[in-house]
Image 1: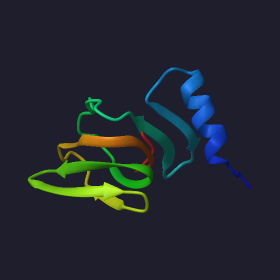
Image 2: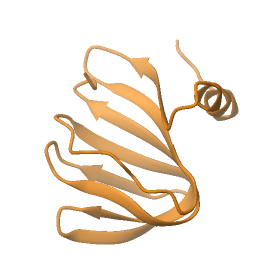
Image 3: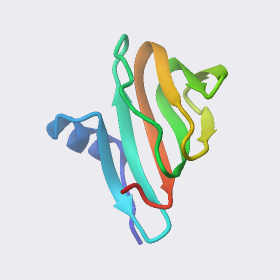
Image 4: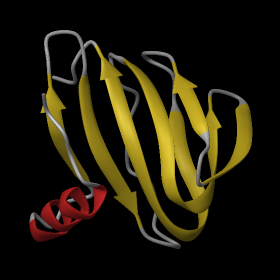
Amino acid sequence: MKAFRLDELEAERAANKGAYLQFLRERNMSVGLYALDAGELDPQQPHRQDEVYFVVSGRASITVGAETTQVARGSVVYVPAGVEHKFHHISEDLRVMVVFSPPEA
C-alpha cells in the first residue's frame, strides 16, 4: 500500500520550491499536487495525457478549450489530452490534486 498525507505533500512541494510535486507514478497513471497562489498566473501548456483535477482548496476559474467554469474545494475537472487549459482569476491559494493517465513523462 502507498498512502499519503496532504500536509506532508504540501510541505515537500514547498521545500522543493516548485508549483508541482509528483508523488506517485505507476504504469498507467501518475499523481501530483499542483499549487498556484492567489493572483498567480498558470504557466502550463497542454499535456499529452488525459488529466483529472481535484481541487483540494482555494478558488479560481478554469478554462478548458472554449469552456470556463468556477472551481473551489471539491470540484473535479477532466481535461482531455492535448486540450488548452489554464486556471485563472485565482482568488484564494489553489491546491489541486492532478491525475495523469498514462503517467506524465
